[in-house]
Amino acid sequence: MLKIKLTRIGRKGQPQYRIVVSEARTKRDTKVNDTLGFYNPLGAKSVFDLDKTKYNAWLAKGAKPTETIRKLALSTKTK
Image (tube, rainbow, N blue to C red; front, side):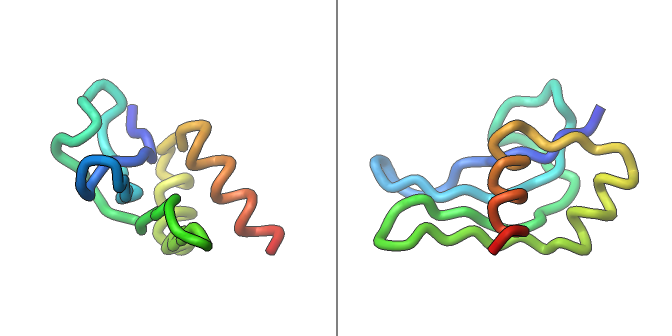
């Protein structure tokens, strides 16, 4: 089963994340099938960039987003 989830990049204390598609049973920072965007929660304004065409294509193929990704994607649709 494929999941759309976050993988951590960045330094200690300064997390940044890539939004990726990978197998649900793999660890957080292992092999990925595709990269869909990035998320930086720090700073005055958090940055969330998601390629919506790729995101919708992976959803159509059966990939399930994690709860965090689902909430972030919904919050950007309303803005």
